[in-house]
Image 1 (cartoon, rainbow, N blue to C red):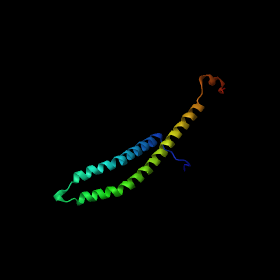
Image 2: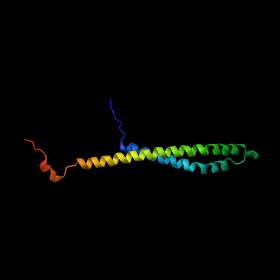
Image 3: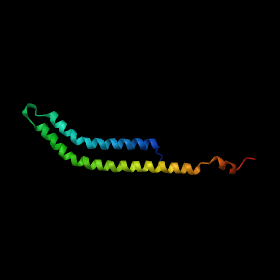
Image 4: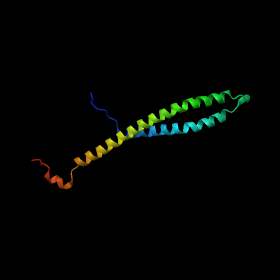
Length: 110
């Protein structure tokens, strides 16, 4: 059984991008409600459906903003984790590399 978690950089990057897209969709959602209400119009001179769409949008607006903020926090942490591991990996790799001049100091086989 493994003691750690293995998440490839590509998966973290993909998750980060997906979370950013979700945030953009949340930001655009409010402006789309006006388009929806306009598309509904007043069929048969009745505005009940449009009024309900407006009511729903008003109630969902606060919840959507809270959810967007939560997703932004998660996205920020995912990006920070990916950056930190990438930086560590680069630094560790550089510290373990051997210069050509150093090869003369390595043990030789007999």
